[in-house]
Image (cartoon, rainbow, N blue to C red; front, side, top):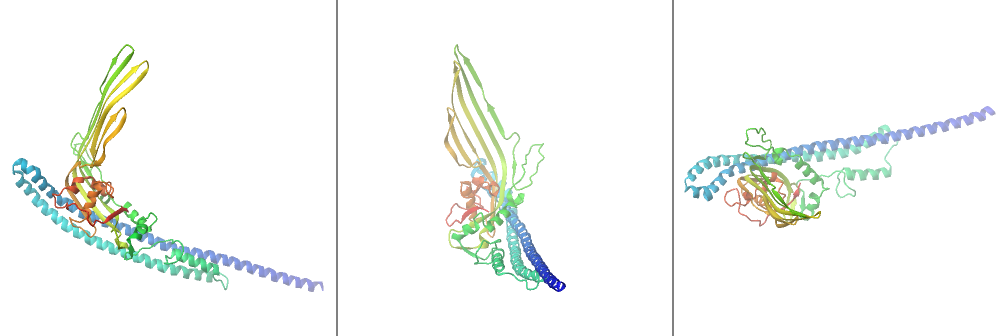
Length: 466
């Protein structure tokens, strides 16, 4: 009887231990299946994001190439304009001074130069248009490839999730109701599905999508916009030629630097010129002493400077709708001019000391002009008083200018007026376009053919740089 009772207890215990072991094993399999499913799905999504990053990097490279070709078109207009400026200077100065003797000489120089310049304008302008079209369509292909790969990845990730759970989990493994809700929320954010709640993990843009201008500022101009971040990355990826950076070059015998970018400077020997004088003398009395002095400082610089660069900017009309692919555009500007910088400061002062107490008195002033700005101030008793604050003021004599824009590589496009507005303190910062806007007279002079008449009617508005 004891054996029978003990056997029954042993069987029940064995069954309980088997059941508990099976439940534990199933739980371990279920956990492993969940981990494997999450890892496998994340791997598929990571590969998708890696592919998107490679495509985005290729798009950035192609966009920079577009900026380079637009820069070449701008350089062609700039090259051709040398002849136009020389003819203008001959008409207004050289010919009257030489009683017409200079005109045949200038014509002999500008004729072949203008012909070569027109050839460069035609060839590089067409090349820029073709290159822009080719790279733009290649980027479209990259964009469609990203969307296609992303769509396939979303479907593949869901399929991988189901396959991994069935192969690694115990019989009957399936996603719980809460898991289905979580999966839908994840697919809505990662999959970039429209009209679903939640913040999207990725953002996609189609170039043909039409947007109201009232909404475009927030979608494309905002700091958190994916489009704005991509455009900023493109702008930051510019090479020295596109951005306008370059090394300085001079004509002294011991100068060995060369131009490595788009901007350069040449100075005659001895410049910049800096002069300082600080004479003083004193008079000692019985109980006091008086010291008189004069301070004079002068800095004068004369340099031939080449400035230019390409910019990717958000450019929007004032109202209506615009296609997403037309929000940002490449434009490029170039100028060469003889820049003059003059900074003069003077001060007369006196110091009287009696019984260990000293009092100062001074009067002076100064003026400065350079970088298309001029200012003047007075110094009275140590206080600087602005007489003329920094105002736009031509401080360079232009010898060449050019502007080109994607799809609008013509010398009289409206965008050149934006350069004039920039030189006058408009929406465009003067340090953009390689500081080409600093050469104010290049965008103000009515003589050379590349410079259009001044007028801003119907002018598109520029937003901040990308």
